[in-house]
Length: 420
Image (cartoon, rainbow, N blue to C red; front, side, top):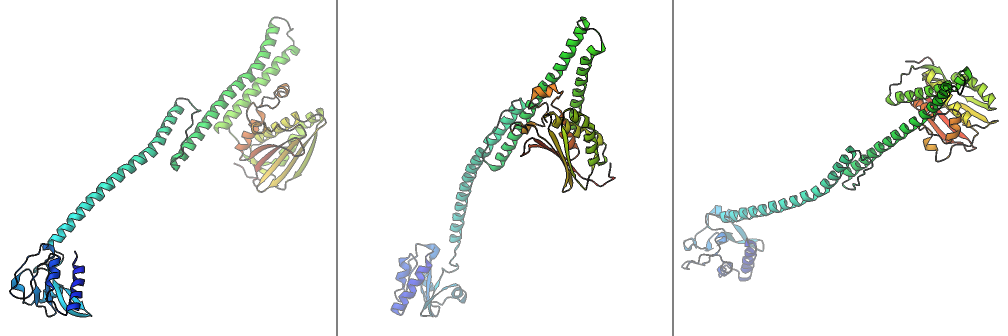
């Protein structure tokens, strides 16, 4: 409270004058009580918080607001609590508080507490204002993207699958927005696929039904005689319909995971050789040559033999369909890590680059006219891939660098005799 400056001034005064005579003027200049020697009147200081007394090196009080104290010796307790006045390392006096108090008076404590309470109130008010501003800021940052996502969810629930959200901040809500967009895109694509598949099924069923109806009406109107020869087209269309319905049912079971498979240890090389033997007559008729290369020491897989045969049948049928007369089908078998790999390549025109992503889609035909003429429904490769996935493998399609399409079938190996 300014006592430090007073101490320095008093010490400088003594060093300059060699005594405390006249030192009361220094205390009076700061509003403290003053008197020097007996008989001097009292002049109470205006600052009650710092009513100080001055004593010499022997503890004799020289300056005080109470005249009765002047000339008296301060108690040892007061001297112990006093501030020393030192000159050149020697104690020349004592600066004492008002009798009965210390330098930290009750009034000082009250003022300090008042200031602390005032500062606390100001800090609390400032903290409240900052908290309110931050709350409003965070509310604006969080509520707006949440409201956007809520609106998007309502649009999705109403069937608007093309609706997308654009959330940039905060990072977590932006990730949620991206996930929502992916989900909406998947749902939209699934809906489009469903519509397209429904239209494709209707188209595939309409053609054989129309042919059947035309032949039956011709037979009914006696345009054609009722003979076995004239019934053959009707039977052929009926078989086509039956095969189409069976294929659709198989795909539906595979998609739902309800397809029943009986796994057993199967010699895959033997199954492939058997399928090539079955197709040999058809290949000879089409003037197609099989070129085989088998380099597989490990050949056993866990599989449903009938379904694996169906996969190979569909792949060979597809390869022969796109191989020109006099062409070749190259088939190679080899081990790769813990898998056995079958690669089937034709020397046809290959797959158009824009068609590669869709070759395993249902009812997809890169050459619809030729497929229909040869009885293709556009489901063979889709069925093959689903069956391969059910066996824990993969089926891929690409174009070979030397020309023609290349299909790669990968199946996990197993030990001979394993089954379940």
